[in-house]
Amino acid sequence: MSSDKEVIRTRIWEETPEQDNPFAALACYCSGYDVYGEILGNASWFEYLYLLFKQQRPTPEQVSLLETLAVALANPGPRDHSVRAAMNAGVGGSTHAASLIAALAIGAGQNGGAHEVAICMEYWQKCGQDLDEWKNILLNQPEINIDIWCPMEHPPGFDPHGSSCSQPVRQTLTKLAQLSTGVALPWLETNRIELEAVSKTPLAFTGVAAAALIDVGFDPKQGEMLFLLLRLPGAAAHALEQEELGWRNYPFFGDGLTLENDPGPKTIRQDEKTAGAK
Image (tube, rainbow, N blue to C red; front, side):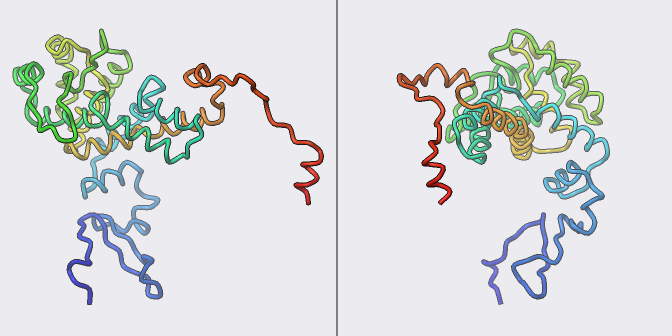
């Protein structure tokens, strides 16, 4: 009989083993639903994603909002540091896993990254729709215990390098606010300009994402994880593209790597071909 120390405790997952192989599952249940007997073929990726994180079925409105947010975040583009990290890894010949790990590492921080989203979601929990509370917290950011993370250097959810709110951010906010049955996104759209005036910085994608994740029903830790996850497709695609194009076509490597006596592409002599055939 197994002791309690050998039991994995989880509310998310349950398995029954195959009769002839205790290391293989006969059936897998996610929050009570048979994954391969009920969910597979009947639920969308985002319905299942919500079920994994929240252990309950989402409403159609929550699914639509989460899916639309995922499209907006899927590819931050080469201007984004996390995508550039994946591109650097790809063009440099790193493994595909290393490209994704590079994107996760750079995209995890407090400057346009996932931890900034988490902090912004914490602000939503504290301030709600109280404009005065938002003004106060943006002007007087709470101190944090310095452990892994350093203090924020700009108001979370806003772009410290921007002069005006970019069109993609505004378009995303408008679309998500139309879809939301929550209160954060519509309130943010109504008060965006005033919040920007207080923070002296324009709203960023991190701010929109934080409000959307609040309206979907996630907490800051879940939002931080999801923000990392939802931005990986673009990083992967760009890494693969740069790997195919090669470092000679990559402007950030080409100027720094100059061979004084470049032999050019290797040519295989006939005797080498013969030796290889043997």
